[in-house]
Amino acid sequence: MLQAHKKLTVDVELLKSKDLQTSLFTLRQIKAATNNFDISNKIGEGGFGPVFKGCLPNETLIAVKQLSSKSKQGNREFLNEIGMISALQHPYLVKLYGCCVEGDQLLLIYEYLENNSLARALFGSEEHQIKLDWSTRKKICVGIARGLAYLHEESRLKVVHRDIKATNVLLDANLDPKISDFGLAKLDEEDNTHISTRIAGTYGYMAPEYAMHGYLTDKADVYSFGIVALEIASGKSNTMYRSKEEAFSLLEWAHMLKEKGDLMELVDGRLGLDLNKKEAMVMINVALLCTNVTSNLRPSMSSVVSMLEGRTVVPEFVPDSSKVMDGNKMEEMRQYYYQIEDKTMSKSQTQSQSLLSDGWTASPSSAADLYPIQSDSSYWEERN
Image (cartoon, rainbow, N blue to C red; front, top):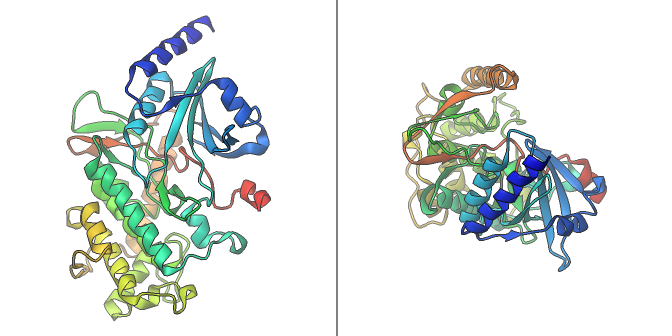
């Protein structure tokens, strides 16, 4: 215990020595904000510990991620996350307010987002969905693209998120999007080409080259964004969707409609007349470009922003039928994905190789590490 306390004291000094754009909170402050981590304030369980809702004396709502100092996510990794997230400041990323390193506690304090996740808003239970008009959907889509463009191209660190999906896009009071789960970086210390990490991601959103071969670049995020863009336009989940044509996924249905020349059928019928058809076609066609099976043919996220905002013409997408992710290929990837999941759950095989191009940093992202609010969360059932 004395040794652990000494180690944590050293970490406080290290934190103070870093040029961080965050605050150091005391444990007393956080206990007061969360009512001593009362179970009623628990809003989720991430891969590294529980997350609690709290309220500071100035009435600022916060989300507190409680990390276990005894877990593999130790003090060094904690410092990595603090250093990384404090350097990533952008309007479309969840904001880190600060941290607390005291006693045996390792805590991260984030902004709290009032409107839960995009997944809940679009295809959660009926009583919890939010009516998103077309202008709001476009705003959300562009915001996500801007956040990713920052991570990939504009920030000091080049960061690959690895788990872009509707659940990891949170909505604030104004329904502006905030990307979550971009922290907890695994930095490569041995060379600049390979990084040893568990393949992270969610079936239905993972780029095929990453899911099948562990090859990771920023274009994996571009693919995932394309899936989310299709979900925004259609109001349907890629993984839960079944069409009358028996398409295996929303993406496959989009390809079928593209071949028929009837992409407007994909658009969410709930929008009614509240729709800019030209903008909807742009969003869907950009999504198809982003989900190209050949990774180097996918656009950069800055190009995506330009196309969505109408500053750049969207190039015509001509699908290669030999490479389209049809039902059989999707099933093959699904089975492979579950095999990988089984291996990562094994104590003897918790690591697999993931290849990164030079200079890239991988964000680990389990499904809900940063701000784990699930679309069917019992907390939200009770709250509403």
